[in-house]
Amino acid sequence: MDKKIYDLIDSYAEDMAKTLCRWIAVPSLKAEGEEGAPFGQEIRRMLDMAMVDAETMGFMTRNYDGYACDIDLGDAPEAVAVLGHLDVVPAGDGWTTPPFTATRVGDKIIGRGTSDDKGPVVAGLYAMKAIKEAGVPLKRTIRMILGTDEESGWEDMEYYCEHAEMPEMGFSPDACFPCINTEKGLLHSLLTAPASAEGLQVKKLFTGERPNVIPGLCEAVVEGGQEVADKAAAYAAKTGLPYTVELTADGVKLVAEGIPGHAAMPEGRRNAIGMLLLMLRELGVEGAFKTLADCVGMETDGASLGVACADELSGPLTNNIGILHLENGTITATLDMRCPVAASLDDIEKTIREKLVGITVKTTEKKAPHHVPADSELVTKLLAAYEEETGDKSGAIAIGGGTYAKVLKQGVAFGAAFPDDEDLAHQADEYITVTGLVRSAKIFANALLRLCAE
Image (cartoon, rainbow, N blue to C red; front, side):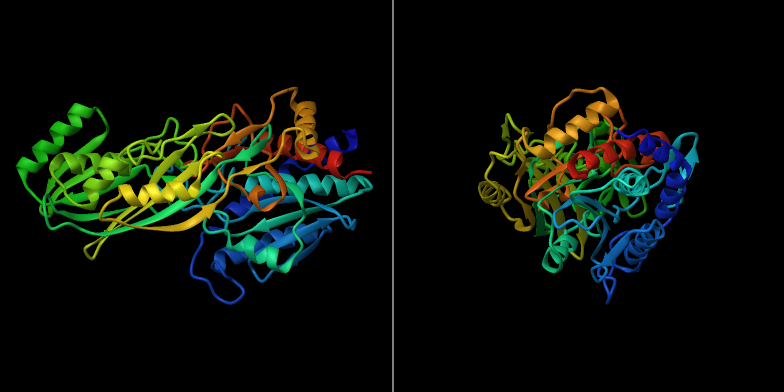
């Protein structure tokens, strides 16, 4: 890559950090929509901030009624997309710093959205700035498209595709290097059932905000006194898992401590809802709580639901119970499944309904798997850029996470986490390093030059 572009990106390091810190200070969580702000005022504020920053760099921007924006470099008819998102998941528990105040500790910037996905978007934007300032002639337009509903229902991309021409080829800097050319299918299910009048009665339980987050803490209050508390304590001791049991005036308070994370990557995590369901079953709950304990519990592979499967291309199915609420006598829960390329989403839906007897199952989100051949122009050029910048000759990989790459005919996920980085997406104390921002910007610039330069 041209040394001038390297030098420019190096010179941007502090500006990149300051830009990201400002963006982190906007809690761009999905909220009640209104005219011009379909996902709430904070997300709209974040979208406006990103557009102003891009315009200050000299780019032309277009706003699509608060759903998304795009930022163009070049005027060629054919474009390559860089698809990122500005919305974030809720902070959740366990933070040691304020999640929506960027905290700099040495090379680290800590805050919700630093790695997913504001930091990678900042790196991509400054890569475009370096190409622009270097005056590189382009045969393809570089079009950064920033969405605002990636962590929820993708209504932003649906709206964008209806009102703009989506490029056929591009990448989403919303996962990891070297390059992800295969994404599993996605199936989100909403489960509802009346609480049973039989067995142990649960008085309070309200855990989880998003289906795609592995919950790190789950609390419940159940009826009973010392005998129930003793039985719960004995179960906790038998399992060796981090439960706490407290006898209160309202009943017995149960707390399960899990290890939070992203639903698509359950390895090394521990679902607190699953832990609590198993405890409740031990104490004698009936109805939907018991069914969920029997069919889901702490499993991440869908085995007891009858949907466990895998293929060589994309690996095993993963399953996460991200929400469990009891309110006004109704139990509500969610399942987040990431399904192998070879699996039938229709068959999985049917099996879930058959297994969860007494529970109403509604599919709320369904996305087919996505695959781009490893020998395509896109994948080969992205891998070449990554190899030039890192020396790593690793090939393309498959993931369970779903990125905006799925909306492109030829789309992959590319960066911005490196293979040795700690995985903190959707977790407490999420961070990115300034060194990583600069390194990612160089890789993005290299890749975009290979795809778009004359």
